[in-house]
Length: 301
Image 1 (tube, rainbow, N blue to C red):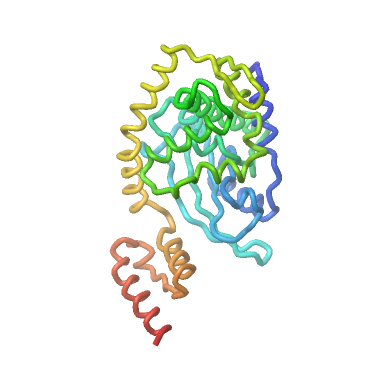
Image 2 (image 1 turned 180 degrees about the vertical axis):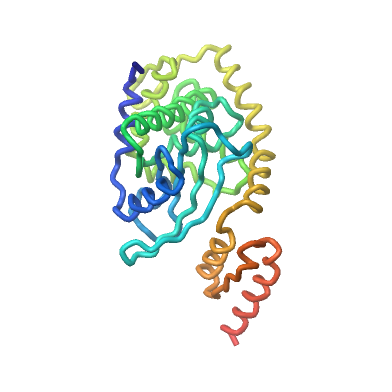
């Protein structure tokens, strides 16, 4: 029997946070199609309850990981009870998700993403839900260890989380506005409140609290080990993310429909998706850009 820490209990409870019925229905549809163990829902739509834009899901599968470069990304559109829904879906094996969350892979995106709020929008059964909760708790432990290794000897929880998110954003192949880490913490105060001491305790790192400040007990050799672990991931972070983007450019299911929706949303110019454009989104890009340019000129003429 697996022993549960206070962190495990907190994460399991947090994953039951309410999601709107349309999201739960979409998660169930995705899960049934993939024969999944569970579906995690995350992102700003989780916080706001809005159905606008693109919903973000992780579909977790039983068995071994099929792709060497994961997750597999796809785009889906579905109308539920008259409500049009759009979703970007990442699919991967639960065991690979667990290992990545625990810091056993070179990936930085899983634990940095899932130390932030998420909801278990669908589960096959209680055992599957418990396994997913354990994996998400692993993300909190991994993130907390690095946060205190990067952060000051003593500081507020926000000092450590800021150090963590600044480092992980810098390691990934994406551009975030300055202060992005502050907006994450401000928007999710209830989620992060008290999380760091629980995660550190579960990771075997003692911490004392002095008012609103924490002082983790992290021996020099352990800090050096964690920073060495991070140095390899930081060094490989951008190349690995470029590799994922290159793969996604050829395997992103529904890429043409996703791009057409984004283009119309931002320019007001509708893009017709032909069978050829659906099969060859990259080759179709110049023609689409020409169509958008002409459409915008006609609007302003």
